[in-house]
Length: 229
Image 1 (cartoon, rainbow, N blue to C red):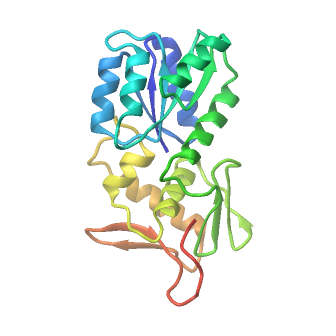
Image 2: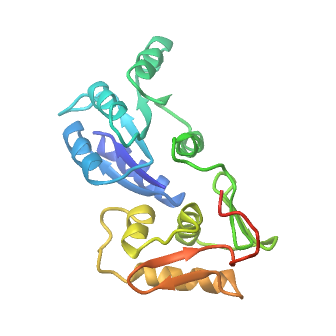
């Protein structure tokens, strides 16, 4: 899951980026509305965590802009203006959810994950393919009923592959979905993380690699199982 945090208070922005990254999200940050608009044009995000009172482009204006985009991004408005009237106004502007500051961080995480599941292109909660089942909300993954002990990045990588199944994801796709904008595009981190994930998934191997195309997880041909859903 890729998240854009738009927050002009740099200390709070740093806390949000660190905390959400620890939850396995790929997190970018913008400190004003102009920077956020530019990043929205460059990258595909699942959720935008949007401060309302922003310099450059006000958060209200940016929220309207996002709501009118063709590639609909879910918006969680995060602001100190937390009265019922403020919430109604924020939702009227096109925000999908509204959380007042100060907030409880675990609640923020749950709201972000909930918004990602509500995307028009999002799939139902449990992801399944090739004997693997992953629940993004509960942060659990199993293969053939046995639990998998995965790191944060391994879990995020497996989630991306299952969401795309049976299609391939290139290294560039995985860098965009699992890592943030500061990751070196020439790094071998995808290859290394895929290798670790393969070892933890065990035999028989379920991650297919096609040179020049990418990686995928798919049900074996002819087993009659549906693709990931």
